[in-house]
Image (tube, rainbow, N blue to C red; front, side, top):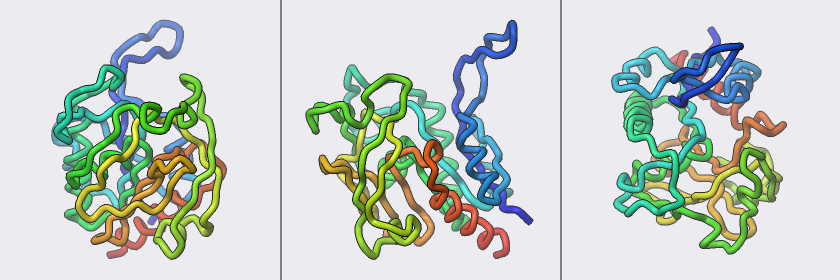
Length: 235
């Protein structure tokens, strides 16, 4: 049986076809393609109350990228450049994560998803990264993925999954991890010191990356997720 991977989805107004312009549940297709290509069955999870009930039927969870997390979740006032906050999505994804952790499912957090992994453990975020690093290299052009090098800690689970400690990654974000949460370890960094990957120290199957692996050519993180999910499904 192929493992079933739940992917947290967006709730946005969208246009499609010749006439439709309506509120929609959507997700960039690259996430679903990567899960399917590495042996999983992707299932979109809308940001609705009670969606965590689906976790009983999942073998793994992918927390996708997207808009900024409500700074109130980590006890900070909202910066003027923090945008797109949707409390319903924050709540739904936190519920999904807690349910997945309770079941011992593998979890991969991508960009916003990695930030959520930190926030739920009491960590904080930098709300506008250029103020900290002095450049826009993590998101140079609106709507266009850039790239930059990342260094991964030797002997970390992240390095083991990726199979190397130096790589070029697709990037698009303006926020970053600040204070690490309880049981959260940084395992990769950009040249400017920005945290680019994390692991839960008390869980062997929770990883997060600040970059967008779904937009690259390296499927190793998705292979890891589907392989761990296969183990969870057999368990």
